[in-house]
Image (cartoon, rainbow, N blue to C red; front, side, top):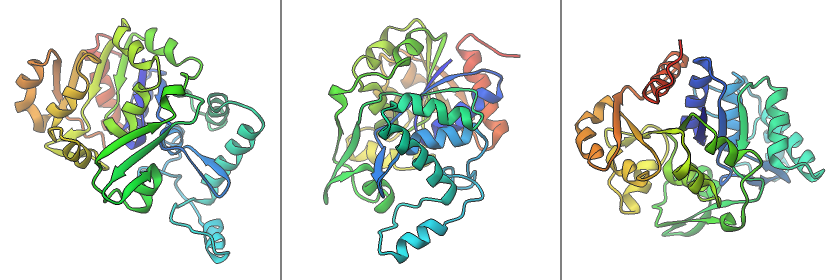
Length: 308
């Protein structure tokens, strides 16, 4: 099973797959990666890694549980801007990643090393080892992803999105193989614009998804016209798309066989089927571990690969 993921929704679905007894390959967005305080930070990769390791802060959905912030407090005392929250344990990840990258080790290999050290059994693959930056055009000008998402709390209307560097990026080792060789391919309920399209936009990845023999399933991150978490609904609206599971399905035409929508959107089954999808209507609100495992099992079943 291969999961295309980013952010909290992707991390929680991948965790559910593991809880269901399946070892997935998880291809993760890197468009939100950033350099701060001299460190290379990969938020989506870390959110997936911490969640699969059982170390994440469940209340926030990101970061590590039991964090302390002594380093951040001292950075502020030294006059550094500390709008991007970095916990002390989280800093250790960024220090290790940055040192290894500076030593010439590619991001995909560094990610495998870090995940193994934390006991993660799933295979985590950044979609590319090359730098890709998601940039948001807003009424205030073009903003780097973390500036938009964290510093300004995604309050700006998004008028356009650029994935800088994506045309020159190459899929990381193993990415195309896991897409084309999967039995089941799942697009997680991640933000289509901020997490999924930066994965599909790396040359060769969309084509691999279009031609794979895998059973392809996508879970809508929009429930009842609202995003479960984050700015997906706002971005759909400002970019001219319908803010609904149907609007998400239109983005994935030709890429998946089955759309999974929440019970709240059961009335959209017919319009989505008219686009050529099979539709599974179920409870997509994963919540805790039991909900994640239940949804993962349902996805495997609808894909023709039920697990005991």
